Amino acid sequence: MEFTYGLMIAIGLVTYFAWQKPELHRKLMLNPYNTVYKRQVYRLFTSGFVHNSSIHLFLNLFTLYFFGGAMEKIFAVHFGVLGYAYFLLLFLTAIIVSNIPTTIKYRNQPHYNSLGASGGVSALVLAFILFDPIQELCLYIFICLPGYILGAIFIGYSIFMGKRGKDNINHDAHLYGALYGLLFILILKPSTLESFIKMVF
Image (cartoon, rainbow, N blue to C red; front, top):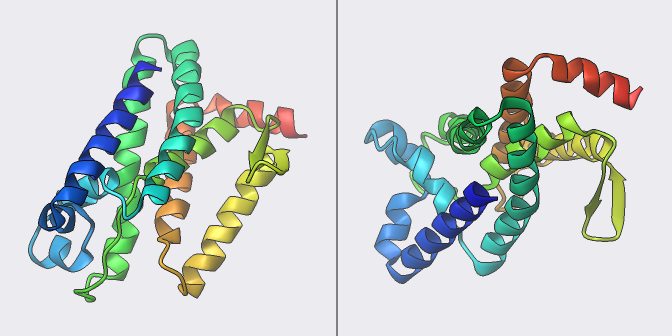
C-alpha cells in the first residue's frame, strides 16, 4: 500500500498547510470561472488535494485507505509492476476528469468553488466493484450490500442530487469520477466486463 499511503500523506499535508494559509487554499481549490477565463487550469488537479473541513478530509482518506489498498493489489495481480503506475494514473487523472463537467457547468459563476479528492476516490471505488462486484460493501457500517448494487445506488443518487443541486456537495464530481473509473478499467482490461457479468448473473 505504499502508493496509497503516499497519496494519503500528500493530500493530508497539502490540506493542512492550505488551512494555515487561506489565500493558498483559495488558489488551490477549483474555481471554474478562473479556470476557464484566467486559464488557471492547474486548479483541475490541485483541488483534489485540499478539503474544506476535517470531516471532509477524514471521509476521503478513510475511503482511499480501504479502496486504494485493494486496488493496488488488484492492479499488481493483473498488470505486474505496471499496475502501480496504472493505479496512480487512474486516481490522479480521475481528479482532473471529474472536475471538467463542473468547470463547464459553472464557468460563468465567479463565486462557485469546489474541492476535495472525491472524484479520484469514486473512481477507485467503482473500479474495485467492476473487479469484484459481489463483495459486500458497507455504507455507514450498518447497511451492507453487494458492490454492484451499492455502485448502482451511488451512481443513481449522484445523478439525482446533481440535478437537484441543493446542498454544498459536488455530486457531479462523484458521478463523473465513478464513470471514469469504470471506463478506465474497461479500456485497460476489456475482459473485466465479461467476468463482471458472470459473477453478477
